[in-house]
Length: 166
Image 1 (cartoon, helix red, strand yellow):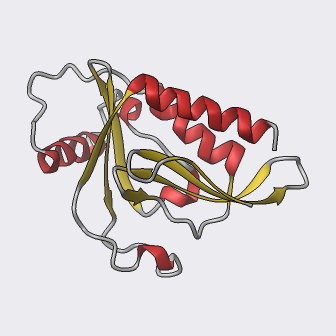
Image 2: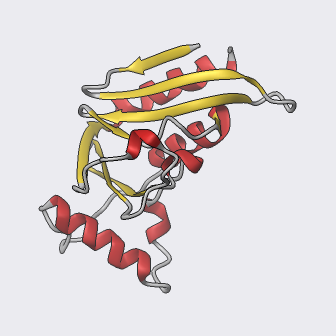
């Protein structure tokens, strides 16, 4: 069954559910949509009620970013997080990362909260998996999308209820 929860033009979750695993987990394919741009590959088989939902809840738990030196430019923001990720002594950086399983392995990605918004920053890696056809020709730009925290949370909770009742 194919489903789009939310909107590709704002925030949406595209799902192709294939059924339950032997352990009762819902399996299938998914990708996220932010402002008309997709994030993640629809060609990676994942636990929808595990990796996908877990990554979205990670995003909800991200910390507020109060660093006065945080840049305004999205490319500079990406470099800021990448530098911090390479700093082995930065034990705070994990609060800004999220992982939706293998569907997001081909991307660098971070999220942060500021005021009442959640901002997602992502960029495809230089060498994406060649078997993920939807990523061939994906732009090398740094993407950023800001959404009201409560709107994001509402859609994630709707997805959670939907997956539990599948």
